[in-house]
Image (tube, rainbow, N blue to C red; front, side):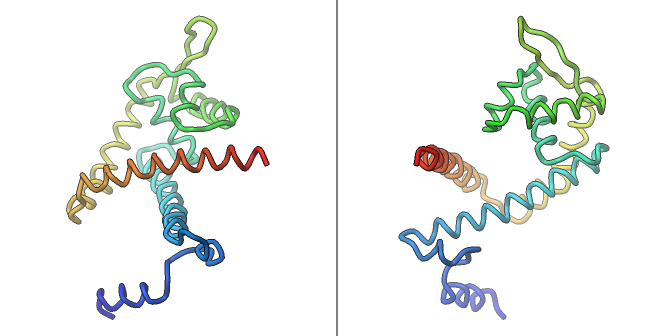
Amino acid sequence: MARSQTASTERNAGPIVSSAHLAAGALPSLSELEFGLILLGHAFDRWMVRCMAAAGVPDLSPLDVLVMHTISHRGKPKRLADICLVLGIEDTHLVTYSVKKLDALGLIVSARSGNEKTVSLNKKGEGVIRAYTRLREQLLVAPVKSAGADERRLSEVAALMRAMSGQYDQAARAAASL
């Protein structure tokens, strides 16, 4: 089937969602966004884990990879609270577990800043991040660019996603008070 016919068929079938009962409400496009986020989230998790394995560190969870990238950010030591804040994680024990795992793998070093523990990448961890970055450029960035990705549009989508995260956080607070 030609691309235009497929698009037309999809439009006639209604929005592409995982839960039609949610799309039946006042804003069906929000259900479309949610389904896209589900698919994107799982694909992104698979990508991070497999790229990190290719960079030499197998068996990390998606959160472990995110924590490692956050620790690497700007080359400054990070407090546990900073990592949680940047990643939007309320359950600090999840980040604590990832930090312990990265430490056991010999990728980070700990220090003290006053009463607080900080973590930084060591030379081995920095090497892994460099390898991940090279692989990302080769396997993800180059194909996305060659497919004609519009950088301005990607930035707009990212801004929308950040704004929507605030809406979901507010709705979660409201739901918790019921």
